[in-house]
Image 1 (cartoon, rainbow, N blue to C red):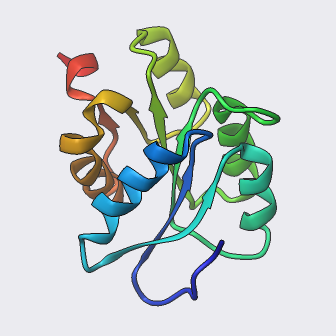
Image 2 (image 1 turned 90 degrees about the vertical axis):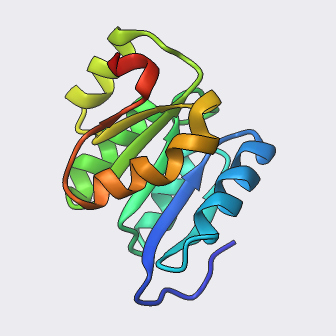
Length: 138
């Protein structure tokens, strides 16, 4: 499901668990300058959509069917290097953070910090900064 693209900051949400997508969409769309232009349950659908509709940011779960978040990040950064990637994960391992960043992701957000950290993460990425969840960067 896609919305008409406007001058707002365009974000794609990718997570195989609909309640997580709904929560993120609600948080994002409370901000007037942000909009969700697509929601997907796996990386393959995301990559197909990106070929047709530009986005500025992808919020991407690691653990998904068909194409996981790491592989989707690798492909996004190869084919659309200006698209920013914020990894979303339940995994709080430094090795995962390091690997995501090595693939080109600009941020890593833990799912249990979405309520408080999603908008600050998006803001950081929009400013060209890297964002790492508070618990991981402590």
